[in-house]
Image (cartoon, rainbow, N blue to C red; front, top):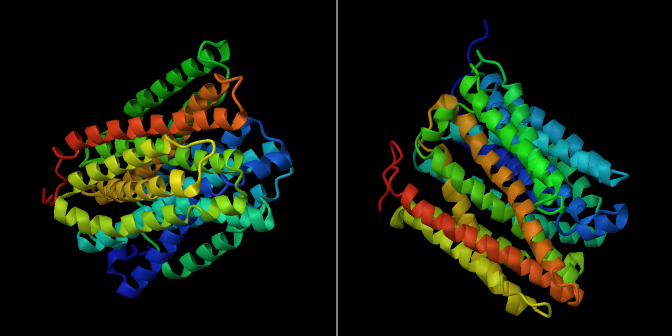
Length: 476
C-alpha cells in the first residue's frame, strides 16, 4: 500500500516559496489570457473577419468555459489530487493556446479559446487550493493570498499592456503563441517544486451537473449577446432554456449523492457573501478591460502598442493596491477596507463614464485608471481571502473553484450585458458621427458598471460586517 503524502504545509520554507511562485505564475497566465486578446481584437477582426458579437465571443468562449467548469475542476482536485489535476490543466491550456495562435478561421479560434478555458478550469482551482494547503491559517496564508490576489489583479492590466506590445510588434497571433513556452515552463517547474498531495477519493464527478450549468450559461450569454432585441423569439427561447437548465442544475445539486456544488458550502464561513461579491466584481472586471482598448483604438485612434503602454498606470495601481491591502485591512478591518475599495472602484468607473470622443489620455484616462486599479486590486485580494477563510480542508478545492467560477461566470454574463447596453446606445444615434456614437455607448457601459459596484458596496457593508469568520478576528 502506498503511504499518504506528507502534509504540504510541512514542506521546507524555501520549497513552499518556490511552489507559491510557480502556482502564482500559472494563475497570472490564466488571468492574462482573459484580457491579452482585448487590444488585439481589431487586428483579429481584420485578419479573420469578426462580427461585433464575434469579438465578444473571442473573449467569452474562454471566460465561459473557464467559469462553467471551474466548479467541476475544483471538486476534481479534491477527489483526484490537486497536483495531478493542476498538471493536466496546464497541458490542456497549452494545447488550446497553441491552437488559438495557429487558428485559420474565427470558428477555430473561438473553439481553441474554449479549450483554453477548459484547461484553465482545471488548473486554477487546483493551484489556489495547493497554495492554501501550503500555508496554514494565519499571517503566512494572508501574505500568500495577497500574492495570489496581486497576480490576479495585475494579470488583467498586464494582459492589455502585453497584448498591445505583442500585437504592435509581432502580430495578433503572437498574443497566444507567447503563452506556449510559459505554459511549458510552468509545467516543468511544477513537476519539480510542487509536492504530490493525497487525493480525497470516494466520490464520483458530477458530470450531469456540469452539463446543466454549462448549457444554461451558454444559453444565457448567447441570448444576451445576440443583438436580436429582447422581444425576438430566439432571444426569448434562449432565456427560457437558460432558466430551465439553471433551475435543473439547482434541483440536481439537491438530489445528487455527489453534487458538484454541495449547497451547504454557501453557508460555510463567508463563502456565500464572497461568491456574490466575486460574481459582481467579475462582471465589471471583464467588461472594463474589453471596452477600454476599444475606446482607445476605435475612437482615439491609438495603435495597439500605444493602447497597451497606456495601461502601465493601471497595472502599477493594481500592484500597489494588492501590496497595501493586507496592511490597511489589519488597521481598519476587512469589511471597512472592502467597502472603501468598492467605493473607490465605483468612483473610477463613474469617472470613466465622462470620456469624450476627442479625449486625451492625461485628462480622460490617467486619473480614473489609477483609482480603478487601486479599488479593483484591493477588492480582489479581500474577496479571495474571504472565499476560503474558515473553510474545512476537505472543501478547499470546492471553495477556491467557486471563487474563481463566480468571477468568470460574472465576467461572461457582465460582458454580454454591457456589450448589449453599449451597442443599443450606439445604435440609438444613427445620425451622429461614429466616434461620438461609439463613445456614448462606452460611457453607458462604464456608468452601468459604476452603479453595479456602488450597489455591491452597500451589500458588502451589511453582509461582511455581520458574518465573522471562525478563527479570524476583524479589528473593526
